[in-house]
Length: 170
Image 1 (cartoon, rainbow, N blue to C red):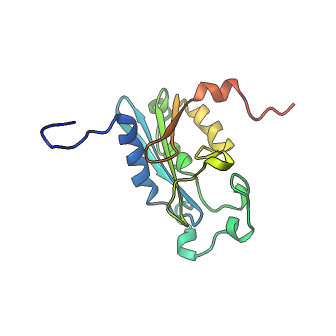
Image 2 (image 1 turned 60 degrees about the vertical axis):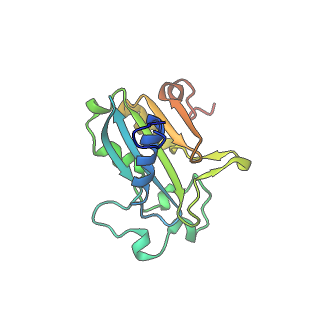
Image 3 (image 1 turned 180 degrees about the horizontal axis):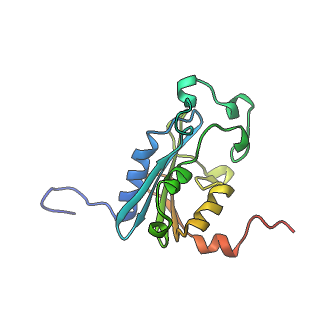
């Protein structure tokens, strides 16, 4: 406890996850909003949230979501989605040289009920989609930290995604 201010100081991981969660609140999706921060050497390199491409109307503004309309399963139907993912928005706003060896902090919030995008019973947790995983690998990001609850998170070394290639199905 920091005795000067009579409060408990949070650790760095939760500090950056809290920032990603605040960024998430700018999201425009009607299903799930994500926020992320890319950090290197204790400096925020870039941030991103879920939203339509620049200049296009957002789902929250037009009041409809094509994935909801077509009852698309979670984790699929991204070809119907108008949004650019939080991770993608953060990566396209940063230089690759700055992202090499960095950590990406990711938080997902269900836009319909405000809960974290976590369903332990179905073993579903916040995680980058397969396209974002490929982009994270190519960006040179080293670690991804994903919030499951306010107190729980997972840390993935991107090298594991390279070694355990989930796109190979033969």
